[in-house]
Amino acid sequence: MKHNDKISPSASETARDIKVFSGNANKELTKHICDFLNIVPGEAEVSRFSDGETRVEINENVRGHDIFIVQSTCDPVNDHLMELLVMIDALKRASAHRITAVIPYYGYARQDRKVAPRAPITAKLVADLLAAAGTDRVLSMDLHAGQIQGFFDIPFDHLYAAPVLLDYLKKLRGDREVVVVAPDAGGTERARYYGKRLDASLAVIDKRRERANVSAVMHIIGDVKDRVAILVDDIIDTAGSITQAVPALLDAGAMEVYAVATHAVLSGPALERIAASKMLKLAVTDTIPLSEECRKVDKVEVFSVAQLLGEAIKRIHNADSVSSLFI
Image (cartoon, rainbow, N blue to C red; front, side):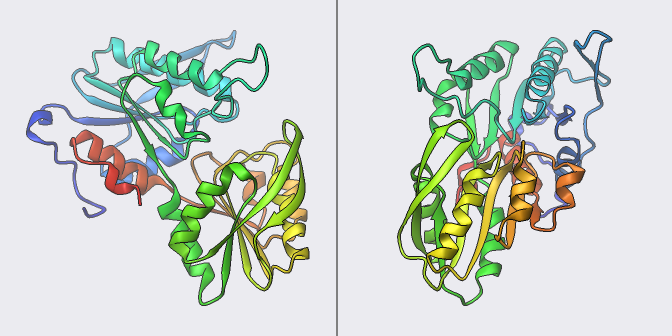
């Protein structure tokens, strides 16, 4: 399909035009998605009452339409989650034919199981809230834990940012020998996936986490000597894991260290740590909009997933296969 192809619905969807709306989290990403789809973004106003309550107005007819709402539940997480839920409710009550929540970054995904007595499973709670609000389908990208898809009793499409980031990494590699590094044992499968497509070896950082957002590098499993090391993760939050891995890799003989991640949460001391780190580049996607402060950090390079999400939206609307987007 060409970039400027018009949406051409299948026979069963002929009368159901597509409309893409956005909350306050992903306005720029939504615009790029709509440019790819060659449509105009939906007209909706998301604001606050004086007491802080979320206020939504849908300013166009959506009766019988196929609706996609693009909204990452990123900082401020609870505000953006509430915006998404209220928009879904408004569109449902306006008689939309189908509502798909496009959540490039799924907040609360790290609370996907009980790790201590009396702990919540908030990823499941958010899934229940989305379904109760009237969501018919969910499209998300690089979930922190794949089993979150099973928390939903409605269709769930899970995309990966790998096609976007691999293009960058192949150009970066050139003819040099590369090792893909998982920053912890939980990221080994992801690192192996990248390593296979880059024809690269694999290494794992043995890390022990004393408490949330605090980590310590223990040692490296695998050979990184005289290789370009590429750290691969799904989320960079405080950047502790990534930046602590860099000196360990260099001490083990790595020539250079780069990092890639899908979701740039970058909270707390993250930017300061990245700027001070000896990693050469950090490549992230625009599933979470970067702050102006972050855009000023030369080491951070942003790649857009708009075309990938746009293609998935087009295929969902036309009842075509989405699985071919999983490379």
